[in-house]
Image 1 (cartoon, rainbow, N blue to C red):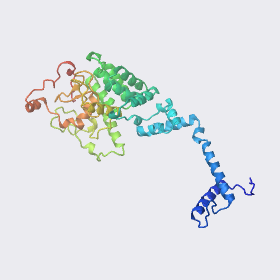
Image 2 (cartoon, rainbow, N blue to C red; image 1 turned 180 degrees about the horizontal axis):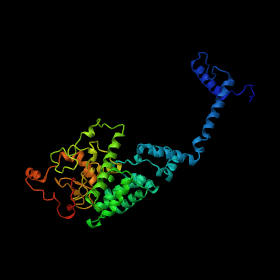
Image 3 (tube, rainbow, N blue to C red; image 1 turned 30 degrees about the vertical axis):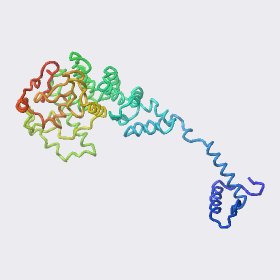
Image 4 (cartoon, one colour; image 1 turned 90 degrees about the vertical axis):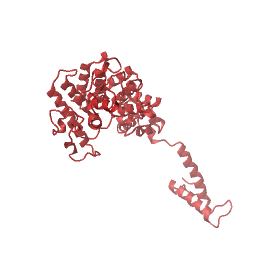
Length: 402
C-alpha cells in the first residue's frame, strides 16, 4: 500500500527498527533541531502510525489458551494432579487464572489427585483445607476419603461420618482404609467394649492382607496364631508373619534412598535384649525373617493421615481427653475413644497399642530397650504395677509378646 507521499509501508519488523533507529538518532545526533528530528518525514509518519497499529492489535488479540477445548485442558490437569509431589504443585495451578481454577476443580481431575496432594499439616488445618478434601472425597478419590475419614473419626470426633468415608475408600480396595476399619472393629472404637466385632475385624484384615498391606499381614498372622477372632492355626499364622517380614524387607531394599547397611538385617537377633523373656521357637540365632518382629530395618514411612493425627494431638498436649491415651507406636497416632480401649504390654504395662502390628513395630524400634518387668518398676518406683497383668474393664486384653 502506498501513501500520498509515494512511500510504502514497510514490513512490521522494519517499521519497529525504523522507530528505534529514529529514536537513537534523535538523542545522539548533533544536527538535531527543535521539533524536527534527524530523519525523513516519511519514516517519522510510519513510526507513529505503526505504533498505534501495534497497540491496537494487542488489545484485540485472542489468547491461544482460550481456544483450547475443555476436554484437552482437563486431560492435562488430570496428569498434573496425579503426579503432584506436594499440595502446592496443584494449588499453584488453581490460582493461575479463572479458567484453570474452574477446570481444576472438575470431579475428573480431583478423583485422580495423588496421595501427596493431601499431605496437610495439622497446624495449618483450616476450613478451606477441609472443603478441598471434601471435594476430592465427593469426586471419588479413595485417598481423600481415607484421609478425611481418619481426621473426622479421631480428630474431629465425628465417628459416623469418618467411618462412612473410610468405608467408601475400602469399597475401592484401599488397603489402609480396610486395615483401619479392622482396627476399629477389633477395639470397638467409637463405642463400648461390647461393640467389638472380632470376626469382622479379621475379615477386613484378611482383605487388606490380600492387597499386600504389611501391617494387615502381621495382624492377621497374630490373630491366627492366638486364635483371636478366628480358629487357631499356628502354621498359617506363621506363614503370614514371614510374608509380612519379607515384604517389609523388600520395601526397604527397593528404596534407592535407603541407608540400610549391607547384610545388617541378617545379623540382628530379635531376642538379644535381656529384658525380653519370651524366646521363640526359632532361638536367638534364628533368621529374623522367621521372627514375630521382622528384620532390623528402618521404620517405614508413616502414612500422611497418621502423621496428621500425631501432629494434631502433639499440639494439644499429647492427649485426647481425661484418661485417654495415644498408641505408643510413634508412627500410628491413633487415640483411644474410651478409657482402657488399647491393650498394654504384658511385661511392663507402661505402653499400650491399638494393634499387634503396632506392638511388633514399636518393640523392635524402641520398646525392647526400655521394657522391664513389673518387679523392676516396683523396686525403682516404690510401688507396684497392679495393672500390668490386666486390670478391670478393657485392660483384660493385654498385649502378649509372642
